[in-house]
Structures are given as C-alpha cells and as structure tokens.
Amino acid sequence: MAEIPFETTLHVRDTCLCLATQRAARALARRFDDAFRPLSLTNGQFSLLMALNRPKPPSIAPLAEFLAMDRTTLTAALKPLERRGLISVAVDPDDRRGRLLRLTAKGRGLLARALPIWKEHHALLEQQTGPIVPLHSGLAMLARIAS
Image 1 (cartoon, rainbow, N blue to C red):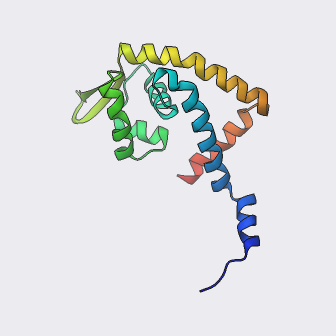
Image 2: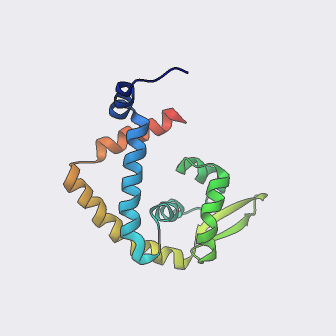
C-alpha cells in the first residue's frame, strides 16, 4: 500500500477549499447555535424558518433546492418545527401529491424574536472580519457551480 507523505496532508490542510469551508461552517454553526439556544432554536432551524418567510408557501422540492439539501433531509428537519407548531404542512390544492409549507403565527413570532439575535451576531462577525459581502458572494457562486 502506498504511503502518503505528511507534507501532502499539510498541503491539503492549507489549500483544500472543501475542508476550509467545512471547518468554517462548523464553527459558525456552533456560534449561532449558542446564540439561538435561549429560544430553543438551532441555526439550521432559523435558516429553515427564514426560508419559509415568503408571501407564497413553497413546496418541499424548491425549498430543498434553495437550501442545498436533499428532500429526505429537509423533511426530517421540518418535523420538529411542525411538532412545535412553528410551521404547517398542507396539501397543495393544485397538485394533491405535493405539500405546501408555511410559517404559523407562532413560527413568525419566534422568527421575529430570533432575528435581532441573528443581526447582533452577524454584526459582531463583520466587526471581527470586515465586510462579509465578498465572502458571501463567493460562497453563493461555489454553491451554484458545485451543485
């Protein structure tokens, strides 16, 4: 079996975009999970609720695509929100096989309480790193081309 030199490990550590993105995502997830903990909300649940904050309720497939999740994972992530009464799932009147997802009044209320927390922590990140817009744009581009 071929041995991979440790220098190669260091090269991957220092240059791998995927590894760097995963590490940053985990660190950011922990930071926002801690921030949202008083609301019994995770960063992923915040993102889901925010993605449902729209005039017309989406079905699962477009929401999964928007969040870059597979439908099975999204469905599993929605269940705790539905059990808490934060979202409702209804049959799509235009396609009885589909389901439409919408925030409930309770979900909108929790999202309204979570948003100032997000704003505060996002502003702190920008103070620590400088403007995040170029990074955000670059990550959005990577998400488009990698999918």
